Image (cartoon, rainbow, N blue to C red; front, side):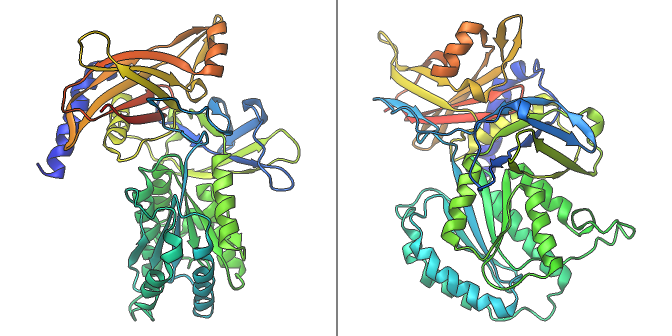
Length: 478
């Protein structure tokens, strides 16, 4: 069966399993998700803020926080026998892709930057969750250590990368003659989007460390009277911003060598502010990678629900501030308000489909599962699931806390997915005492799941109907 046929079959399976339940969905319209990192005056993470410490203004209009989550920090409880977690280390996962952008490195700095990376990359403590690409002078994206399934050398690849990296850099020595400013911008943005597309399925937060001296400004000819703002007036930026937001990727411009003139410095700063990243200058790459990862795993999650009139196909500026003195927030400050053409049911089907097809488990909702054989002569697995309630929107009313969650369970064999997935509608309703216990020990849920001899793995997917947040966990059953 072709990949396209498999995708259609999977989509039909989810559609059949989900149609009756999703048709009843009371999900909100598209939401805005922000992931601010809070830093004190010495640049260290601040992780004890509450929702009341944050204020959000969207295009001059104050917004109410719909859902709030503190950083997931600290080691997780050890896993027992036949127990599995999508956050085995406790913290939210994070990945970084390094893009060595030859197009936007000026000739005088390219060689020195290349040598600096040649020296620093093999000294990385670990290459786990770090990837490397080169954008050569012809505008071709060359994967050196690309995003993909785990390889045996995933942690140690930086020690042997210099030869492959040097070969990719030496393959082109000059730009094509027809390579003008617009083509340069187009190829640069395409490279960022291509890497973001590959990173989209990875769990947790994602960053592209963009090794560059800046980028040429090419005004959008369709906006001749634009106000001069780089984000609003530059060609191809809306498409780039939409892609990066959809894939959950921040861009961190990084210049090792040379001075940046005010124009390009402004541009890279705006790229960082547009995506929630940070611009780095003349720091060792090892220190930069540590800081990027530290800020990402210590970030908060904030969701707010703009009005329906918000989606006006225009740039929106977000101003998010912290009431605590001395705290600086690193967070994206803009988004392009593209209206959704999907109904809430269609949107949730798409989210479930993406998690269903992904080669990786996602950790947006923390999950732990302890499994055992079903009782008696029944063939299957009994699952005791613990859900992290801080990742769900549980509304308090009349002393009770209620939520709306879908649980999808699918079987996988040696050749792929088996049968049709099961979809359950969970509506947790907790007393104040149960809520307090759940916040400490996790929200419990037990389920028997019959299996056949062909089933080797089971995947559970949890979708919060109130926030579109999703978590998944795959575990072996034989």
